[in-house]
Image (cartoon, rainbow, N blue to C red):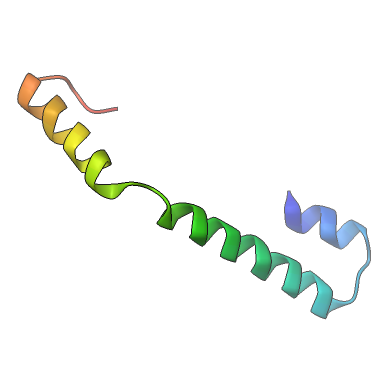
Length: 54
């Protein structure tokens, strides 16, 4: 959706690539904020309890 919207604005290619790059950096930062140890422990607890994962 972001790319389609950017193309419809008819911006120069460099601005399109910069915008997509910024969105990628924001996404990567959001993934880094995930508490992996907590996420792993929840899966382990569910497996031990016999609850199927989602």
